[in-house]
Image (cartoon, rainbow, N blue to C red; front, side, top):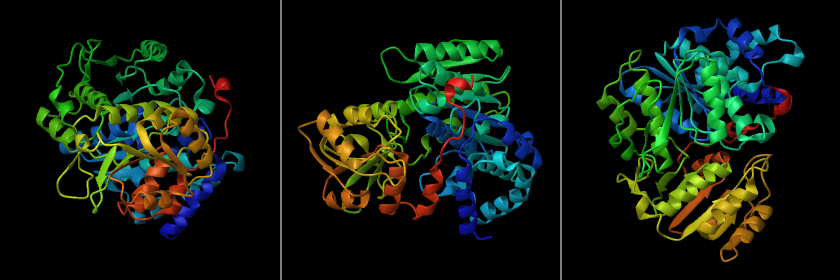
Length: 465
């Protein structure tokens, strides 16, 4: 089997959808030797900020000298991004080997219960991390939490970043219903950390934690500033270290909340995994997470901000970042010197927007269009893309004074904007992945980006409680 053939095999698993439930994953993991029993995990769920929080935790523990596995989704360009050890992508050779070793196990499943793409990839990751004797795995959920394939593990700590409306057709149409699914990762007597602020969602998480006797640590805002620190709770009052969330290499005030979540998690696990203040500081100072408010500078001096603002809540975060212009640096710039957000966010914004049809794209347009002087809408390279012309109409309605154009694709939009000083590309992580390829920041792997496509074969959310 070649790497291309392995990717094609994984692509074929999309036919089995993304069934909710843990039975298949437990069975496949058992057939593979239950690799999860040999590993320690921090399990991370939430609507937004999961990836950034995972990246921060990974960086801190790696700087502390641990061999750290990182499992995230979706990937921006290469499938191999999903499975990393010490931020090194799983090799093509290992992908081929893992697919080949799991393939015979599928015969143990009835045709109508064949493991799905995500179930297979989840067990691939567990097997790989156990083989390489990872000392800790930062483990991000896929969709939801309670019935997500990742939920077959018992972690050292559970993290729920926040709760917002997204994937309502699968997770439920209220914040409380979505919180119910996310809170499904809470395990008996295992500590939980959350920055959830919405009252109904937080109340649900509190109830689940209480029922499972799981100590709950809530992250609140400091009065009068945007730095987030742990609140007094069942763990007592951990000493806040605000300086460690002030100088992050990731742009956006929201990243301080994610950093506070990571700090709090490290704090409550000090007895199991001691990490010094200095290693924590260095870890946060060196975190890297592409595609989320990633500021790059092209050789011609043009600055481009890439952000996968794929739902209304994340679009609001982008809006605040563009309005605030808070100074920050990014290690993702193409030149040796770092880009500074405040050096570009005060200039007129040109927006390239592409959104998936199953997202609340009208409200995303209403949120972002008023910020731009020129708007170029594009289709996302996905069968689920929203129509660029419809996006353009919605953007024009939201901001009639902006010049609005619908383009055939992202490449066309970038060509038309080659001389623009500052461009924001957003609306979908799929679009960000395509941008990274077109801008030469990632090797082309269009066939692998297609692996992010899925459909859910499951009961409606209302019938799964």
